[in-house]
Structures are given as C-alpha cells and as structure tokens.
Length: 380
Ligand code: COA
Image (cartoon, rainbow, N blue to C red; front, side):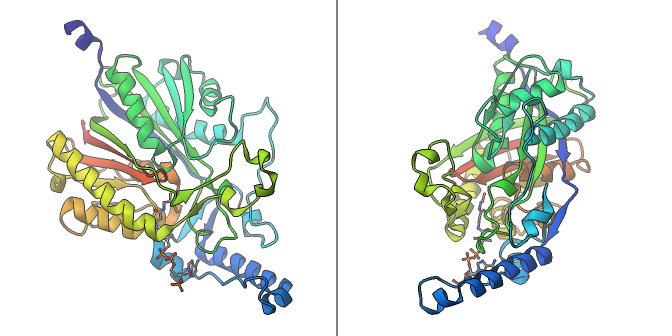
C-alpha cells in the first residue's frame, strides 16, 4: 500500500494552447450563401416542386440562428468554397504521406503553445492523446503523427467521444498520472468540424466551427508554479441516436448510402436540448457533492459551447442564480460549436484573471450522449 501510494501522482493542468484559423464566416455571409443555394435549387426544381415530387427548400435567417443558438460567427480553415453556393463544402488539398497532415498541423500549433506556456520541452512529455470528434484517417493514429512532429518520445493514441472527447482525454491523462504511468501528457483536440457539417442543411448549417486546443496534464511534482489542481474528474455516457453521423469504413459495403445526409452530422436539436440539460446539471451537482465542493461557490464555469440557452439553464441550476458572463463565459458567439474544444477554448481565454484558490469547472456534453466534468482549483 505504502509503496503504491509513493508511485502515484497528483494530476494538474499545467497549461493550455489554442489554434484559431484566421478565416471566419459571419451569420450574414453564411445565410446569404445558403439562401442563394436555396433559390437556385428551387428554380432548378420548379416543375418537380409544382408537381409535388420535390420539396421546396426554405431560406435560413440570421435572426433565427442568433436567437436559437447564440452563434454569430465561426472560424473555418477553408472559407471560400463553403460560401460558394455551387460547392458548400471545405476544400483542403490532399497532402502527401510525407507531409504533415491537416489535422496534425493545427493540433501541433495548439500543442506548441501549451508547451511554451508551461515552459516545457517536448522531451519531457510521456504521451499524446488526440481526442476529437473526427479523425482525418483511421490510421496511423493522428496522435502518433503529432507526437513525432513535436519530437516526443513515448506513446500516443486517438480517442473519440464526440463533443466530450477533451474531458474524457483529460480524465484518461489524469488517470495515467494518478497511476504513476506518466508524468506529463498532452491532450490535443483538433476539430475540423467544417468537414462533417452539412452546409446545405438549414437546421444545422450554422452550428460548427474549426479550431484546435491542447491541454497539458502533469504530475504536480513537476508542474510549473502557475497551474490548476485537478480536484476530480467524472465521465458519463448514455446511448442516444439524437446526434449521429453514420460515416464510416463500412459505407462502401452499402454503396447506395454513400453521400446521403446521414453520412454527415445530423441531430434532433430540440430533443438534445431537453434531455442533456437536466442530465448535465444533475451530474455536476452530484459530482460537486462527492468532492465536497459547494456548486454555488464555483467561481467560474467553462461549459461546452453548443448553445447559449443550454448553458444559461445549466449554469442557473448549478449556481442557483442566472450566471453573468464572468461566471459562465461564452465563446460560441465567435467560434460556433467547436465540438470537444469548446469548453477548453473558454478555459484558455477566460481563466488568467482568477485568483489563487478559486475553484471552477470545465464541463463538456454532446453526442453519445457523453458528458465529462473536470473540477479545478487555481494553485498560484
Ligand atoms: N433559419 C430559419 N428557421 C429555421 C432554421 C434556420 N436556419 N432552422 C430551423 N428553422 C425553423 C424550423 O423549421 C422550425 O420551424 P417550425 O417551428 O415552423 O417547424 C423552427 O425554426 C424551430 O426549429 P428547431 O429545430 O426546433 O429550433 P430550435 O429552437 O430547437 O434550435 C438548435 C435549433 C439546433 C439551435 C437547438 O435545438 C440546439 O442548439 N440544440 C442543442 C444542440 C446541441 O447541443 N447539440 C450538440 C451538438 S454536438
């Protein structure tokens, strides 16, 4: 027992990193392009629509998007083709096998910033977990390519728990440290969500944006003085078809389904909203109780960034009052939903002002359903 205890570590967050694509699409630009596509589609199919054989498409609206989601803009890696009504997809040139792949490139950028902020050398890192909603290819793992590009010895692997990938990655990294199997682990979430978004679907075309985040989870014994103690991590999954993407390696075995809308992101947004809010609020409160933390005393919530209304309700249930922007910062207004990266962007951009001893919560939720909580306290 004594021997085991001496081998275990205490996990902390040493630093985070963020890569934000330069290009951004405003709601106005997005809706103008979508509505041009709708007009063109309806004109081209006028006879079939009149005969009742094809359903007319309806225009999107900036007012709806902002009111229903809180999203005003999103960053993307490839703006022009997305906005071209004849394309409405990102265009990212295929790279050779000896070039750094697109996903690894943005992941490396986020990792480098985290390493720099922690004053950490790549040689000190034991593992890289690439935790994201979509991987650019099945293998070799993105994490191993990122590991190699950074010059890290050790190991890496990919993991996907959709919007909760980053918090699941943080708990996995924390468990390696608790078990004494690693002292320094990078959790990187490169999210090229523009690739799985159906830009022709009025219900969801406004939702996602591209980004990459990195979280350096380390043993307190080697961490820089300025770090965040991880007070506890908790994960939860409950199967649901309400957010789904059927793209996969078996699609070619059923060629009639290739290219259909279900091979991209689809959701029953209203059901997701209704079912996930109580699940997550209850999870946060019971985990706070288990850790002996008063949820109403949390200084800040860094919530998953999918919908401003969801965050308002969750924060209210946790804090016992309507949260202001300082207590529950929003980044989805300019980043859109960045899947697993959302709560990490919020933490990265809105945590430096907190004081030593302040307690906060990083919380993700999304497809699966999946949810993860990481309670943290500022050490210095
Ligand atoms: N522009 C204008 N109107 C639109 C529209 C658009 N782009 N998209 C949908 N509408 C219309 C619908 O047709 C519907 O019209 P109706 O009432 O006449 O049928 C109405 O607006 C309401 O649509 P609905 O889909 O019920 O909207 P909503 O209020 O549920 O908002 C979401 C949609 C997606 C913003 C919201 O459900 C959401 O964010 N849910 C949570 C999603 C989530 O967190 N997902 C996790 C992803 S990882």
